Amino acid sequence: MPLYAKGTLDLPFNPAFLHVSAFTAPGGKGTRDALLMSSFFNVERDAAGDKVTRVFERDLAAWIPDIAAAVPGRFDAARDLEVLTDRAGPPYRHVWPNESERVPDGVVPFEALVVPGGFLATPKPGRITLVDLDDPKRGEYVVVEAGAGTPDCSGGQVRNDRWFYHQALWIDMDADGRKDLVTARANLMPFLYRCPPVGELVWFRNPGPDLRPDVPWQASVLVGLPRETAGPEVNMELADLEGDGVPEIIATHFVTSDHVSIFGAPAGGGWPDVAAGRAALRRNVIMSGQDRPFAVEAVDLDGDGRLEVLTSNHQGDGCFDVTRDAIPGRAMALVPPASGRIFDEPWTTRVLKDDIRPNPTYPAPVRGPGRLAPNRAIPFWPERAWEGKRRPWILLGGDEASRVWILKPRSERPGDWAYDSVVIFDINAHYGPGTTQTLARDPAGEVVSTIGGVTWRYDPPGRDGKAEIYVPVFEARQIHVFGFRKARGATRVRCPADVTLACPAG
Image (cartoon, rainbow, N blue to C red; front, side):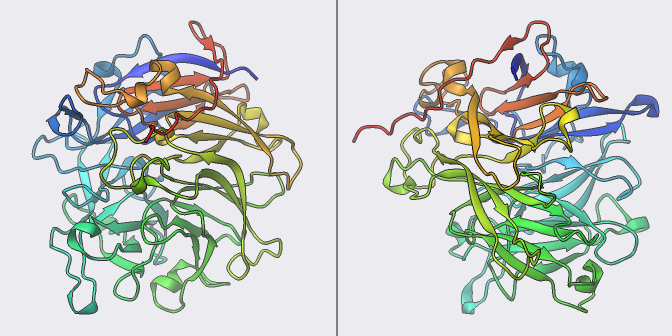
């Protein structure tokens, strides 16, 4: 099936994580797809690429509210894109926003976007806010503001409140009829404060009628301090893996261990039993030994009627002593035990694509981890009519491998884990040979090398919908648009070779 390159959407900032969601159209007449995005580290560097010389845009979350109308070649960011955070002006409070996504209907009394933020090495702690999309001023409601105190690991205890947040899930934890926010979090810069890295699974109680813009939600720790430090920290997914109507939480441990874990309510019970202390949550490590697990998606990959977990790890280039990961980057399927006893028996790891390495870290790193790859893997169908009838394909973003792949199952047979992969986009092929290893002149010192979090949607409504793919090229400030429907001005994709640049000599 041919794929077509439709062109680019040029932005005034670095696009990071993308998502597509349907929002109410103007006048309340139906819905329209919006492209949600986060942006951070909008900087220019000196000629050597060593020092930040200018911050040209703040960290932010934004959207293109009508992505169907955003046609490459006619897209105007000043007209077609809107920044949604810190609208009141400086001081800007958002730092390194991550997976900004639509809040489910009914959680709060307005259409909203959730913005979790912060990252391991940012100078400021993270936060989570909700943006009121019904408000023309895009007012924000604080769910949590991380503390600013100095972590203390004296006396054999870990005390920390400098958290960052990557993603948000929604579960009614206390049976009050309102969904609460569930998330994982990690502590900032453990290497600086000489404290061990900490991950926690936490939930924040929806205040319901007591919702106020400046009042944080009450927090409860499910897994974490003071009992343990090795809770999950980054990416998450919510899915009913047992098919009993009660969802499980799937989460990655990116910093504290090499695990992908599942967490569940007690058998025959629900999450309110855990929240009230009537029962302990169930948990199981469903993958280990693959180094840095990244994103997770629950999907029936092989058409056998059971949900698998699609995941990826995030590995170094292997070129320098400080970036020498023995395990390469991979896309993997985590297959549940045939018995269905997902908390009691081991899961099976199936490698779907192997030997992924980022292009060599540039400039040469002083310390690790350097460049990492790949990014998240997400399932999709080239045509809407295929859903429920054929196995999904997989869209895999390369991060600093600087490429994007599509993985296609070789057969429709359940249990067949063989996939063919093709490169649909390569930074070095598009922008010129060696782009990922060359300091750009505009902006000074930047290196165009990173693919952000890819996403997709179906183009028109109805059974005739075909997949449209959005690829953010972080430092180039562009989103490349691809589709399986030929459009005016689009060119057929000729897949580049699947090549990683060689490590520098010596």
